[in-house]
Amino acid sequence: MTDKPDLLLIGRVTDRMMDRLRTRFTVHSLFDEADQTAFLTREGARFTAVSTDGHHGLTPAPVEFLPNLKVVSSYGVGYDGIDAKGLAEQGVIVAHTPDVLNDEVADTAILLWLAVSRRLIPADAWARSGAWEREGAFPLTRSVQNQTVGILGFGRIGQTIAARAEMFNARVLYHARSPKDVPHTYVESPVELAAASNVLICITPGGAGTRHLVNAEVLDALGPEGILINVARGSVVDEAALVAALSEGRLGGAGLDVFEDEPQIPDALKAMEQVVLTPHVGSATVETRRAMGDLTCDNLIRFLDEGRVHTPVPECRGLNEAVA
Ligand code: NAP
Image (cartoon, rainbow, N blue to C red; front, side, top):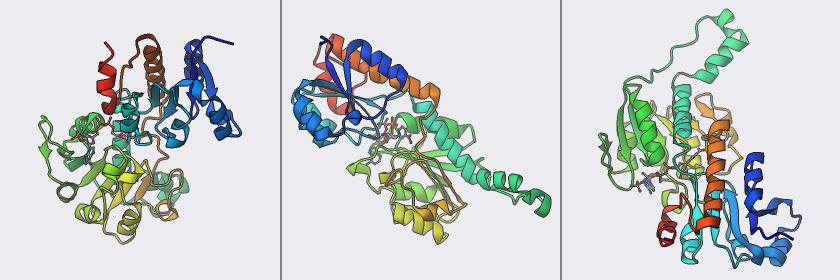
Protein backbone atom coordinates (compact mmCIF):
# COMPACT_ATOMS: atom_id res chain seq x y z
CA MET A 1 0.00 0.00 0.00
CA THR A 2 1.07 3.58 -0.64
CA ASP A 3 -0.34 6.94 0.38
CA LYS A 4 0.38 8.47 -3.02
CA PRO A 5 -2.77 9.41 -4.96
CA ASP A 6 -3.75 7.21 -7.90
CA LEU A 7 -3.16 8.56 -11.40
CA LEU A 8 -4.81 7.01 -14.46
CA LEU A 9 -2.50 7.13 -17.46
CA ILE A 10 -4.10 7.09 -20.92
CA GLY A 11 -1.64 6.67 -23.79
CA ARG A 12 2.11 6.26 -23.47
CA VAL A 13 4.55 8.64 -21.77
CA THR A 14 8.30 9.04 -21.95
CA ASP A 15 10.52 7.43 -19.31
CA ARG A 16 11.32 10.90 -17.99
CA MET A 17 7.62 11.65 -17.52
CA MET A 18 6.96 8.29 -15.90
CA ASP A 19 9.84 8.81 -13.44
CA ARG A 20 8.49 12.23 -12.48
CA LEU A 21 4.88 11.09 -12.17
CA ARG A 22 5.91 8.13 -9.99
CA THR A 23 7.59 10.44 -7.48
CA ARG A 24 4.17 11.81 -6.53
CA PHE A 25 1.52 9.39 -7.83
CA THR A 26 0.78 5.70 -7.99
CA VAL A 27 0.53 5.38 -11.76
CA HIS A 28 -1.85 2.90 -13.40
CA SER A 29 -1.66 2.60 -17.17
CA LEU A 30 -5.08 1.97 -18.71
CA PHE A 31 -3.41 0.50 -21.79
CA ASP A 32 -1.84 -2.27 -19.69
CA GLU A 33 -5.31 -3.59 -18.82
CA ALA A 34 -6.68 -6.38 -21.01
CA ASP A 35 -10.25 -5.50 -20.03
CA GLN A 36 -10.30 -1.72 -19.54
CA THR A 37 -14.00 -1.54 -18.71
CA ALA A 38 -13.70 -4.21 -16.01
CA PHE A 39 -10.66 -2.40 -14.58
CA LEU A 40 -12.45 0.96 -14.52
CA THR A 41 -15.61 -0.56 -13.02
CA ARG A 42 -13.52 -2.11 -10.25
CA GLU A 43 -10.96 0.65 -9.64
CA GLY A 44 -12.32 3.87 -11.24
CA ALA A 45 -13.39 5.52 -7.99
CA ARG A 46 -9.74 5.56 -6.80
CA PHE A 47 -8.60 8.03 -9.45
CA THR A 48 -8.58 11.77 -8.85
CA ALA A 49 -6.10 12.51 -11.65
CA VAL A 50 -5.74 11.55 -15.33
CA SER A 51 -2.76 12.05 -17.61
CA THR A 52 -3.60 11.81 -21.32
CA ASP A 53 -2.51 13.34 -24.62
CA GLY A 54 -3.98 15.24 -27.55
CA HIS A 55 -4.28 12.04 -29.57
CA HIS A 56 -6.17 9.89 -27.05
CA GLY A 57 -8.01 12.69 -25.27
CA LEU A 58 -10.53 11.58 -22.68
CA THR A 59 -13.65 9.98 -24.04
CA PRO A 60 -16.90 9.89 -22.03
CA ALA A 61 -16.39 6.13 -21.46
CA PRO A 62 -13.63 6.45 -18.83
CA VAL A 63 -15.15 9.62 -17.31
CA GLU A 64 -18.35 7.83 -16.28
CA PHE A 65 -16.21 5.44 -14.20
CA LEU A 66 -14.26 8.25 -12.51
CA PRO A 67 -16.64 9.82 -9.97
CA ASN A 68 -13.80 11.39 -7.96
CA LEU A 69 -11.90 12.92 -10.87
CA LYS A 70 -10.44 16.35 -10.07
CA VAL A 71 -7.75 17.05 -12.69
CA VAL A 72 -6.88 16.04 -16.24
CA SER A 73 -3.47 16.93 -17.66
CA SER A 74 -3.07 16.56 -21.42
CA TYR A 75 0.26 16.35 -23.28
CA GLY A 76 -0.40 18.67 -26.22
CA VAL A 77 -2.09 22.02 -26.80
CA GLY A 78 -5.10 20.75 -28.80
CA TYR A 79 -7.77 19.24 -26.56
CA ASP A 80 -10.60 18.60 -29.02
CA GLY A 81 -10.70 15.00 -27.71
CA ILE A 82 -11.65 16.18 -24.21
CA ASP A 83 -15.05 17.60 -23.20
CA ALA A 84 -13.45 20.44 -21.24
CA LYS A 85 -16.70 22.38 -20.85
CA GLY A 86 -18.53 19.34 -19.45
CA LEU A 87 -15.66 18.51 -17.10
CA ALA A 88 -15.41 22.12 -15.90
CA GLU A 89 -19.12 21.98 -15.05
CA GLN A 90 -18.34 18.93 -12.90
CA GLY A 91 -15.54 20.86 -11.15
CA VAL A 92 -12.71 19.08 -12.98
CA ILE A 93 -9.73 21.20 -14.09
CA VAL A 94 -8.29 20.35 -17.50
CA ALA A 95 -4.71 21.42 -18.27
CA HIS A 96 -2.81 21.38 -21.58
CA THR A 97 0.64 22.43 -22.88
CA PRO A 98 0.37 25.76 -24.74
CA ASP A 99 3.29 27.95 -25.90
CA VAL A 100 6.14 25.43 -25.38
CA LEU A 101 5.46 24.03 -28.87
CA ASN A 102 4.76 27.26 -30.80
CA ASP A 103 8.19 27.43 -32.47
CA GLU A 104 8.28 23.75 -33.42
CA VAL A 105 4.82 23.69 -35.01
CA ALA A 106 5.53 26.98 -36.81
CA ASP A 107 8.75 25.46 -38.15
CA THR A 108 6.77 22.44 -39.39
CA ALA A 109 4.32 24.70 -41.23
CA ILE A 110 7.16 26.58 -42.92
CA LEU A 111 8.98 23.32 -43.68
CA LEU A 112 5.90 21.96 -45.49
CA TRP A 113 5.35 25.22 -47.39
CA LEU A 114 8.96 25.30 -48.60
CA ALA A 115 8.93 21.60 -49.46
CA VAL A 116 5.77 21.94 -51.59
CA SER A 117 6.75 25.18 -53.29
CA ARG A 118 10.36 24.23 -54.04
CA ARG A 119 9.36 20.58 -54.73
CA LEU A 120 11.87 19.21 -52.26
CA ILE A 121 10.70 15.57 -52.40
CA PRO A 122 10.67 15.28 -56.24
CA ALA A 123 14.03 17.13 -56.37
CA ASP A 124 15.51 14.67 -53.88
CA ALA A 125 14.17 11.77 -55.97
CA TRP A 126 15.68 13.37 -59.11
CA ALA A 127 19.07 13.56 -57.44
CA ARG A 128 18.96 10.01 -56.05
CA SER A 129 17.51 8.25 -59.11
CA GLY A 130 20.15 9.38 -61.56
CA ALA A 131 17.61 11.51 -63.47
CA TRP A 132 20.03 14.43 -63.14
CA GLU A 133 22.69 12.57 -65.16
CA ARG A 134 20.18 11.13 -67.65
CA GLU A 135 17.77 14.03 -68.17
CA GLY A 136 19.65 17.09 -66.97
CA ALA A 137 18.52 19.89 -64.71
CA PHE A 138 15.47 19.55 -62.47
CA PRO A 139 12.53 21.70 -63.69
CA LEU A 140 12.20 25.17 -62.18
CA THR A 141 10.06 25.50 -59.05
CA ARG A 142 8.07 28.35 -57.47
CA SER A 143 9.64 30.88 -55.09
CA VAL A 144 8.42 31.37 -51.53
CA GLN A 145 9.62 34.97 -51.60
CA ASN A 146 7.15 37.90 -51.74
CA GLN A 147 4.03 35.75 -51.39
CA THR A 148 0.71 36.52 -49.75
CA VAL A 149 0.38 34.12 -46.85
CA GLY A 150 -3.09 33.59 -45.37
CA ILE A 151 -3.13 32.20 -41.85
CA LEU A 152 -6.39 30.58 -40.73
CA GLY A 153 -6.36 30.68 -36.92
CA PHE A 154 -4.26 33.48 -35.45
CA GLY A 155 -3.49 32.43 -31.88
CA ARG A 156 -0.17 31.45 -30.32
CA ILE A 157 1.05 29.27 -33.19
CA GLY A 158 -0.57 31.26 -36.01
CA GLN A 159 1.22 34.42 -34.88
CA THR A 160 4.50 32.51 -34.58
CA ILE A 161 4.07 31.33 -38.18
CA ALA A 162 3.41 34.95 -39.25
CA ALA A 163 6.76 36.06 -37.79
CA ARG A 164 8.53 33.37 -39.83
CA ALA A 165 6.60 34.21 -43.00
CA GLU A 166 7.82 37.80 -42.72
CA MET A 167 11.39 36.51 -43.06
CA PHE A 168 10.36 35.46 -46.58
CA ASN A 169 9.09 38.98 -47.34
CA ALA A 170 5.51 37.77 -47.16
CA ARG A 171 2.39 39.88 -46.88
CA VAL A 172 0.49 38.22 -44.03
CA LEU A 173 -3.31 38.11 -43.92
CA TYR A 174 -5.31 36.21 -41.32
CA HIS A 175 -8.73 35.05 -40.27
CA ALA A 176 -9.77 34.07 -36.74
CA ARG A 177 -13.03 34.40 -34.81
CA SER A 178 -12.10 37.99 -33.99
CA PRO A 179 -9.49 40.52 -35.20
CA LYS A 180 -6.29 40.90 -33.17
CA ASP A 181 -4.21 43.94 -32.32
CA VAL A 182 -1.47 43.08 -34.83
CA PRO A 183 0.06 44.82 -37.86
CA HIS A 184 -1.50 42.30 -40.27
CA THR A 185 -4.75 42.49 -42.19
CA TYR A 186 -7.82 40.71 -40.81
CA VAL A 187 -9.97 39.02 -43.44
CA GLU A 188 -13.65 38.34 -42.72
CA SER A 189 -13.97 34.74 -43.93
CA PRO A 190 -11.89 31.68 -44.89
CA VAL A 191 -13.07 32.01 -48.53
CA GLU A 192 -11.94 35.64 -48.78
CA LEU A 193 -8.66 34.75 -47.07
CA ALA A 194 -8.03 31.92 -49.56
CA ALA A 195 -8.95 34.11 -52.54
CA ALA A 196 -6.36 36.72 -51.50
CA SER A 197 -3.56 34.26 -50.65
CA ASN A 198 -0.90 32.26 -52.50
CA VAL A 199 -0.58 29.91 -49.55
CA LEU A 200 -3.20 29.17 -46.90
CA ILE A 201 -1.88 27.82 -43.59
CA CYS A 202 -4.43 26.22 -41.23
CA ILE A 203 -3.69 26.42 -37.52
CA THR A 204 -7.04 26.50 -35.69
CA PRO A 205 -8.12 23.99 -33.05
CA GLY A 206 -10.05 20.90 -34.19
CA GLY A 207 -13.54 19.90 -33.03
CA ALA A 208 -17.07 20.73 -34.12
CA GLY A 209 -16.52 24.50 -34.33
CA THR A 210 -13.91 24.26 -37.08
CA ARG A 211 -15.03 21.08 -38.90
CA HIS A 212 -14.51 21.49 -42.65
CA LEU A 213 -13.75 25.18 -42.30
CA VAL A 214 -11.67 24.54 -45.41
CA ASN A 215 -14.23 23.16 -47.87
CA ALA A 216 -14.48 22.94 -51.67
CA GLU A 217 -15.35 26.63 -51.94
CA VAL A 218 -12.26 27.67 -49.95
CA LEU A 219 -10.02 25.36 -52.00
CA ASP A 220 -11.41 26.74 -55.26
CA ALA A 221 -10.78 30.27 -53.98
CA LEU A 222 -7.15 29.32 -53.28
CA GLY A 223 -6.95 28.14 -56.87
CA PRO A 224 -4.74 26.14 -59.26
CA GLU A 225 -1.55 27.97 -58.24
CA GLY A 226 -2.44 27.97 -54.54
CA ILE A 227 -0.93 25.85 -51.78
CA LEU A 228 -2.74 24.54 -48.70
CA ILE A 229 -0.77 23.76 -45.54
CA ASN A 230 -2.59 21.99 -42.70
CA VAL A 231 -0.87 21.69 -39.32
CA ALA A 232 -4.11 22.13 -37.35
CA ARG A 233 -6.31 19.01 -37.23
CA GLY A 234 -7.46 16.75 -40.05
CA SER A 235 -11.08 17.64 -39.29
CA VAL A 236 -10.51 21.28 -40.29
CA VAL A 237 -10.14 20.35 -43.98
CA ASP A 238 -12.73 18.45 -46.04
CA GLU A 239 -10.30 15.75 -47.17
CA ALA A 240 -12.55 14.38 -49.94
CA ALA A 241 -12.89 17.90 -51.37
CA LEU A 242 -9.11 18.35 -51.05
CA VAL A 243 -8.38 15.13 -52.97
CA ALA A 244 -10.85 16.18 -55.69
CA ALA A 245 -9.40 19.70 -55.99
CA LEU A 246 -5.82 18.41 -56.22
CA SER A 247 -6.59 15.61 -58.68
CA GLU A 248 -8.58 17.95 -60.95
CA GLY A 249 -5.86 20.61 -60.87
CA ARG A 250 -8.13 23.15 -59.12
CA LEU A 251 -5.54 23.40 -56.30
CA GLY A 252 -1.79 23.67 -56.87
CA GLY A 253 -0.38 21.65 -53.98
CA ALA A 254 -0.66 20.74 -50.32
CA GLY A 255 1.53 20.10 -47.29
CA LEU A 256 -0.32 18.00 -44.73
CA ASP A 257 0.72 17.00 -41.21
CA VAL A 258 -2.77 15.98 -40.06
CA PHE A 259 -5.54 13.86 -41.57
CA GLU A 260 -9.22 13.15 -41.02
CA ASP A 261 -8.79 9.47 -40.08
CA GLU A 262 -5.26 9.23 -38.61
CA PRO A 263 -3.17 7.19 -39.10
CA GLN A 264 -5.01 6.40 -42.35
CA ILE A 265 -4.06 8.62 -45.30
CA PRO A 266 -6.06 8.37 -48.55
CA ASP A 267 -4.09 6.48 -51.23
CA ALA A 268 -4.92 9.27 -53.68
CA LEU A 269 -2.91 11.76 -51.57
CA LYS A 270 0.01 9.34 -51.25
CA ALA A 271 0.20 9.10 -55.04
CA MET A 272 0.37 12.86 -55.68
CA GLU A 273 3.80 14.42 -56.16
CA GLN A 274 2.44 17.95 -55.57
CA VAL A 275 1.62 16.87 -52.01
CA VAL A 276 4.01 16.54 -49.05
CA LEU A 277 2.85 14.33 -46.20
CA THR A 278 4.12 14.11 -42.62
CA PRO A 279 2.68 11.80 -39.93
CA HIS A 280 1.42 14.37 -37.38
CA VAL A 281 4.89 15.42 -36.30
CA GLY A 282 4.24 19.16 -35.83
CA SER A 283 5.75 19.25 -32.34
CA ALA A 284 7.67 15.99 -32.52
CA THR A 285 11.26 16.85 -31.63
CA VAL A 286 13.17 15.58 -28.62
CA GLU A 287 13.48 19.09 -27.20
CA THR A 288 9.87 20.17 -27.60
CA ARG A 289 8.38 16.85 -26.49
CA ARG A 290 10.54 17.07 -23.38
CA ALA A 291 9.18 20.56 -22.63
CA MET A 292 5.62 19.34 -23.23
CA GLY A 293 6.20 16.35 -20.95
CA ASP A 294 7.62 18.53 -18.21
CA LEU A 295 4.63 20.88 -18.35
CA THR A 296 2.20 17.95 -18.31
CA CYS A 297 3.86 16.70 -15.10
CA ASP A 298 4.23 20.19 -13.61
CA ASN A 299 0.49 20.74 -13.98
CA LEU A 300 -0.34 17.52 -12.12
CA ILE A 301 2.20 18.14 -9.38
CA ARG A 302 1.04 21.72 -8.84
CA PHE A 303 -2.52 20.49 -8.59
CA LEU A 304 -1.44 18.08 -5.89
CA ASP A 305 0.35 20.83 -3.95
CA GLU A 306 -1.95 23.82 -4.54
CA GLY A 307 -5.22 22.55 -6.02
CA ARG A 308 -4.60 24.37 -9.30
CA VAL A 309 -2.52 24.00 -12.46
CA HIS A 310 -0.11 26.22 -14.41
CA THR A 311 -1.85 26.12 -17.79
CA PRO A 312 -5.59 25.40 -17.64
CA VAL A 313 -7.59 25.26 -20.89
CA PRO A 314 -9.76 28.40 -21.29
CA GLU A 315 -12.96 26.58 -20.17
CA CYS A 316 -11.32 25.83 -16.80
CA ARG A 317 -9.58 29.14 -16.11
CA GLY A 318 -12.33 30.37 -13.77
CA LEU A 319 -12.24 27.14 -11.80
CA ASN A 320 -8.46 27.28 -11.59
CA GLU A 321 -8.38 30.92 -10.50
CA ALA A 322 -11.06 30.33 -7.87
CA VAL A 323 -8.41 28.39 -5.92
CA ALA A 324 -6.58 31.19 -4.16
P1 NAP B 1 -4.80 29.19 -29.88
O1 NAP B 1 -3.76 30.12 -29.37
O2 NAP B 1 -6.01 28.90 -29.06
O3 NAP B 1 -5.26 29.73 -31.33
C1 NAP B 1 -6.32 29.19 -32.03
C2 NAP B 1 -6.78 30.19 -33.09
O4 NAP B 1 -7.80 29.56 -33.87
C3 NAP B 1 -7.35 31.48 -32.50
O5 NAP B 1 -6.89 32.60 -33.24
C4 NAP B 1 -8.84 31.32 -32.72
O6 NAP B 1 -9.54 32.52 -32.94
C5 NAP B 1 -8.87 30.51 -33.99
N1 NAP B 1 -10.15 29.84 -34.16
C6 NAP B 1 -10.81 29.03 -33.29
N2 NAP B 1 -11.99 28.66 -33.81
C7 NAP B 1 -12.09 29.24 -35.02
C8 NAP B 1 -13.08 29.27 -36.03
N3 NAP B 1 -14.21 28.58 -35.91
N4 NAP B 1 -12.84 30.01 -37.14
C9 NAP B 1 -11.69 30.70 -37.28
N5 NAP B 1 -10.70 30.71 -36.37
C10 NAP B 1 -10.92 30.00 -35.24
O7 NAP B 1 -4.18 27.76 -30.19
P2 NAP B 1 -2.67 27.39 -30.65
O8 NAP B 1 -1.86 27.16 -29.43
O9 NAP B 1 -2.22 28.37 -31.67
O10 NAP B 1 -2.94 25.95 -31.31
C11 NAP B 1 -3.82 25.85 -32.41
C12 NAP B 1 -4.07 24.41 -32.78
O11 NAP B 1 -2.96 23.88 -33.46
C13 NAP B 1 -4.28 23.41 -31.64
O12 NAP B 1 -5.57 23.50 -31.06
C14 NAP B 1 -4.05 22.09 -32.34
O13 NAP B 1 -5.26 21.62 -32.92
C15 NAP B 1 -3.08 22.46 -33.47
N6 NAP B 1 -1.75 21.87 -33.23
C16 NAP B 1 -1.27 20.93 -34.09
C17 NAP B 1 -0.03 20.37 -33.87
C18 NAP B 1 0.55 19.34 -34.81
O14 NAP B 1 1.31 18.48 -34.37
N7 NAP B 1 0.26 19.40 -36.10
C19 NAP B 1 0.72 20.72 -32.74
C20 NAP B 1 0.20 21.68 -31.89
C21 NAP B 1 -1.03 22.25 -32.14
P3 NAP B 1 -9.77 33.62 -31.78
O15 NAP B 1 -8.40 34.01 -31.34
O16 NAP B 1 -10.47 34.75 -32.45
O17 NAP B 1 -10.56 32.93 -30.71
